[in-house]
Image (cartoon, each protein chain N blue to C red):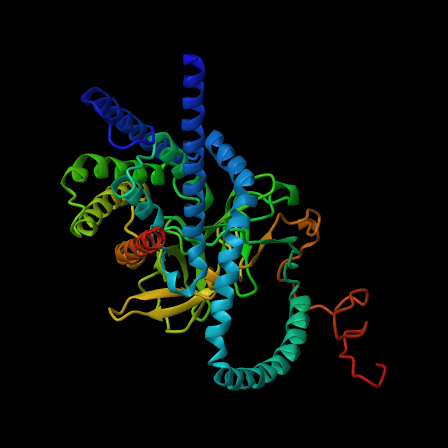
Length: 174
Length: 311
């Protein structure tokens, strides 16, 4: 009976993690395909970092590091990045969200955006530095600023839409 | 695993360590990847092949929606666009009539000077599966690979000019490093002044001109083409035009619109036997054209064919 329970638990965990992986993979693909829009010609926003941050802070879902590692690898393969760069970014994002900020986030007020800005810029700066060391040359900074800027602008928009949907669903339920 | 924060200090510390181990592993992989090891290249190629259908399927709806948006956006400026196109057609007609006569002249001169014959390359065209959406990398995946004879280093072109070159080949897909990528360096020359240079991407919209002689005086709007130095890329492929920045520096603006790449052609290896060095006589004194060679627009004796006369 106990063994059965354990098996069910493992199966449950496996299915949840698989769904999370598929969800993150779809988000990554959507993020890449955004460059088809002329608005995101310079560079695309990092939707995956917004999603991961929301998962941890808002929905209390802590994505396993292995899932983030694999998702990052797939992203690097799809867009031809240096193998492992995106994984480092995602792992750092998770680490900073969990260890530096989560304790201090007051969910009643709108501090989440500021914390997200700090976490995102910190993780991105580290990855950018690694890239700089690898390529030995400074790239044009306008796409990088656009990437950071558009991600930070999109964050409150996604936040508002999530709040709106939860409000509507609560309204329907009541 | 998918619950909230770790409940006790021990598991918290172990997960923290595990995170660091993974980050270290990734860092090692990044540096190993930079060494361009065959094993990593093969793994990447295999995974690209494997993921290509899923990526294509997931990108397709967004691509279609973006297309609809573009159509709606351009619908507003249809009238202006029509007027511009009409004037462009008029200009092109004039250029076309001039170029056809110049082409004939060029053929004659080539024949007289016994210039090395142009080798015909085999061209493979594939559909772009992904868009160049990365911040640090600018590459595109196409749906043609080893199965069509594509190899690493071969140049990729579009109808407008050079797109980049192949950096990784799988069985069914190839990855093309775009001109604008920071790792891309192309030997080029300025067409007006013939000065050689190297064109390097900066992960932005403009390309840097490197190793250009201090004596060179680039002109705004001057065409830049591949020089063919190094023997990897053929010469004479359009790269872009010179633009002058506010600071007075010269950059190259690529002719290709990298965001709207749908089909990309790869120039595959040249067929052997198209040229034998024994037959080449170099810049020999002017000779009468051999009657056996029939040039376009010329009769067997080398005279121009005038329509209606039968000569």
